[in-house]
Length: 195
Image (cartoon, helix red, strand yellow):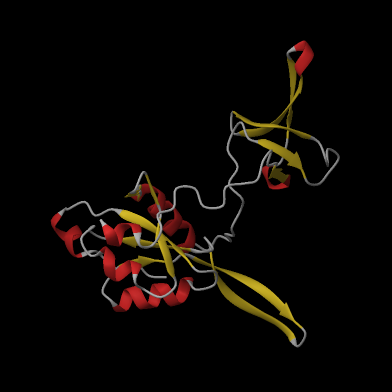
């Protein structure tokens, strides 16, 4: 989806990006409604092939399911929160959380390029992961990065010794030791409207 220049950007004003948590499969409708209300919206999409009984069709899907990005000042939050399909503004400690412009710009560059992009579970160094395929399938360990290579760290706790083996990042999945937090730090849609 196209990003237009924000009104204040021409004058060098810093305008922050925010994430809106939306109802499942309502991202495009939310983006359309908020754009109609005059807000600057970014909805990164990717192409995927969906197969049905009567054939296959290429569809555009959100790169971040249930999220729409919005850039603008904090003043008009009520029109945002009352938009059908918007559940909440992502925030922490009762305040909307800003997203660094560099992260939005990086996503925009990927979407506008000819490279194939698709959603992927968030995994960071130190996370407990499991190998999904290949000769190490089923092994669990910690994910490390060393000199642009991903490594699986296997440990013998009693000896306090570890071994690192190089792995392809595309075959690892995060292992949750407890129930994953689906929506960390969400503000209920009426929380900002009341303040």
